[in-house]
Amino acid sequence: MRVLATAGHVDHGKSALVRALTGMEPDRYEEERRRGLTLDLGFVWTRLEPDPPGGAGDGHLAFVDVPGHERFVSTMLAGVGPVPGVLFVVAADQGWQRQSQEHLEILDALGVRHAVLAVTRSDLADPGPVRADAVERLAATSLGTVPSVAVSAVTGTGLDELRRELARLSAVLPDPPADADVRLWLDRAFTVRGHGTVVTGTLGAGTLRVGDRLETGDGTGALRVRGLQCLHQARSSVSGVARVAANVHGGAGTALGRGGVLLTPGRWRPATVTDVRVHGTPAAELPRTVTLHIGTAAVPVTVRPLGEDTARLTLTRGLPLRIGDRAVLREPGGRRTPCGLTVLDVAPPRLTRRGAARARAAELTAMTGRPDGAAELRRRRLVRRPDLEAMGVAAPGPPVTGDWLADPEHWAVLRERLAAEAARHAERQPLDPGLPAEAARHLLGLPDRSLVQALADTPGTAVLHHRQGRLYGPGETRLSLPPPVRRAVDALAEELRRTLRPARRPALRDPRRPFDGPP
Image 1 (tube, rainbow, N blue to C red):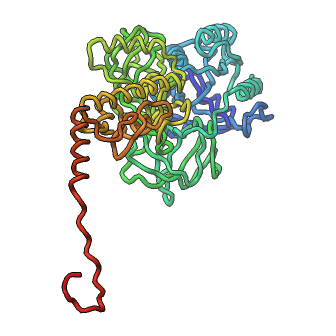
Image 2 (image 1 turned 135 degrees about the horizontal axis):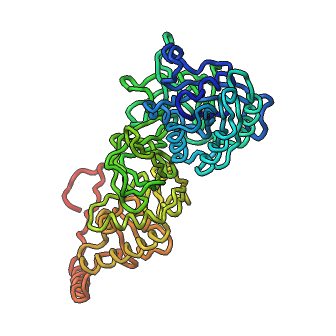
Image 3 (image 1 turned 180 degrees about the vertical axis):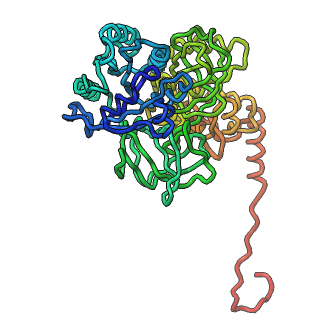
């Protein structure tokens, strides 16, 4: 399956077009049909004939139909957030409008690269000038030069050509990994009598299976998947990208709804502070408080500019973010152009010392937003493997002990420091042989005592002995005393051996003989 979202100005015929393409009604509410105005997200689908080549799955193409009114831009963001491509709609009789521009800016901010342009109402006006203008505008964004079709949902003109273009687009959309960690952004949640809670969303990657355990984004709820549907068909498993409805059980008291997210357990960490690269707007010009849109979530954040195009965001609630995620910053009310961002770090260091922000800005300048295990390990020096993978970064090598990963250069420095600390302890504390392992951990600033043992056991480390929680240098296996004291102790031991004789053991008495005194 492929999933596209619609985009374009209000009343330009987005819903009418997908209705003509699929034969299904995207407007779910009577109020929407009465007013002829989309107020919420709609979901319809069709089967492309013939099936597009190149890994397009079962040939189904689903549409997330979004509202075009300026009052529902947040709803539009929830619809386009999880999908990889769009059907952009402009009306031939109205041309480019305000929400056409804002929707395009949002798509550019998200870095969307796949689209088809449909110029609707071509039966009411010459589509040529509007088509040329829209193609030029789209070409200046992340979408690039896109195929365009003039259509009429009323007469059917151009619909076959549009289907062919959509089939070509479906063939080139990227195939996400089926074994990826699940992050299902929810766009609806409701109750079905006899079944319980059902949630829907666009599964961007990974695979959902009946019986899977999932956790909520804040980690407070654990749910079990009791049933799955895709395009109204019961399924035992669904892989992204796909529209999916999941019947879930558990998580008593857990609030589910639009903006929520269900996750593979233990594979994500909610981030409340993140460092990002901002696109399209200088970081210093961002408002102090804006809304972060990612997936279907919209969360207020506080912005702290760091560099020209980098900033630190403090979120009002934790979100499951990973390095490389694309998102949108938008000021409520739409007074400013939405700007995009790329997540650079989901577990950034605290900025508490003078000059720390300036140093952090310089460090962020070199970060690309592409997951790089070796680079992350160099920056963090020591990190647990699950924590690194929760950032969206694959481990670059095996752990040094347990699940701890270490940068090789930093590990070599720690080995030298440990040997030096053990030697210093032996010199300063001759009556207390062996550096306690816990003291070594504090001296080296290690987060786990097992790392001390791993350092001592690393081949080539000068610290050779680790016994009963203490570290001994080469030859330092007994109490180390100054030479005069050692000579006096040795002399005393020899004198005691000469003068003191062991007591004579009495012979054992035969129990059969009566006692008649000592033998």
